[in-house]
Image 1 (tube, rainbow, N blue to C red):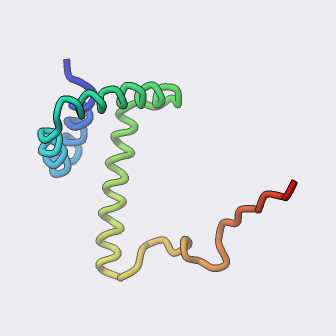
Image 2: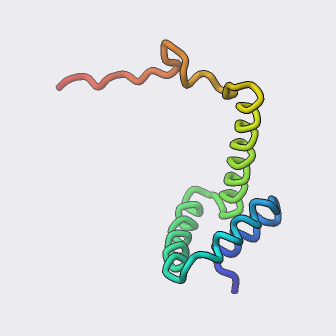
Length: 103
């Protein structure tokens, strides 16, 4: 039976072979204690996903999308010297949070 960590690594490798190679290499360096902690965490994480109506495959796809977004932003920054989103540094702030009223 394949454990969840191996399933995640192999699923990532299927969709992104270069990153899968990196994950495989890094996972070989981990000892049994790490793998036990990872398995315990992933069991809880899978329950959380299920309670949210999501699957581990949904989570893997989100992870791969994040990698693609980071790569895109890195290239964009190298080419232009700027990030795609400038709203973080906009003034006045785009999002305002009301202060709590004193008691």
